[in-house]
Length: 262
Ligand code: GLN
Image 1 (cartoon, rainbow, N blue to C red):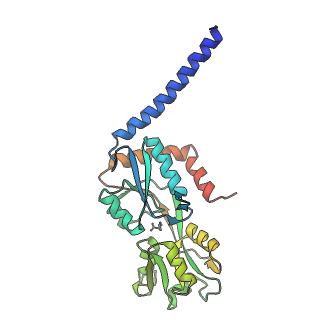
Image 2: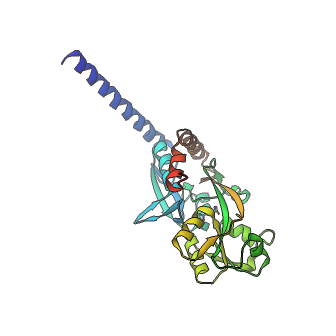
Image 3: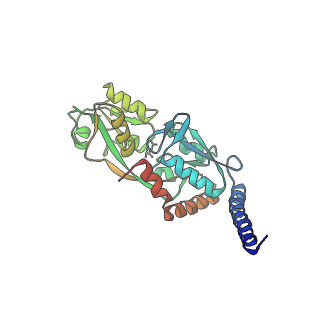
């Protein structure tokens, strides 16, 4: 073997050794982390929340699914996604059934009593969907009239709307298991409006004829990942991974893929 060939060979060995080390160090990091199933990151979500999480064939895809996968890769863990009712996610994370709740989940004071939240990775806005020919033109019309509002059970839309202070109050709320069921109820006239986050609202309006979103949005919120209060180590690793994925542009790229601005 001549000198050049020997150098190339030495470089190739060095490069593959480095790659080996990198994946090795990720994997060993993963095995040190205390998770629900060893070597796995078990994520609870509700996959009726496009473009954050939804079904594509037999797969769950979307912004949260991709961000969680990128975090799991950094942590050397295999991502496992469980599709459950939205209002069972916090309790499941708290009781140690799931490692994380990643579901376009808004950080609220009340939820912070039960779980920790990672740094926020996206913003959401509560929107109101009505029928195109609805007499409801503004949020104010909705609050003042005697209208029924459909919400997804346990969401911030449910919490705000159920309150008589700023919402319509319990008596005028119809709760549904998921956003899709609430929108179906609106289309069939069972409710007069649906209060839901702006991105799923856009997706539902695009997929169902005769609906529109009120121009005045209801309220702005921050999405983050819920982690058990008894797993501070996992929270720290998730925040570190999120920070790296933000700095190298991965998060922005994933969001742009599902919510194109160009
Ligand atoms: N952002 C809302 C909440 O946290 C709705 C989330 C959802 O429906 N997946 O309550």
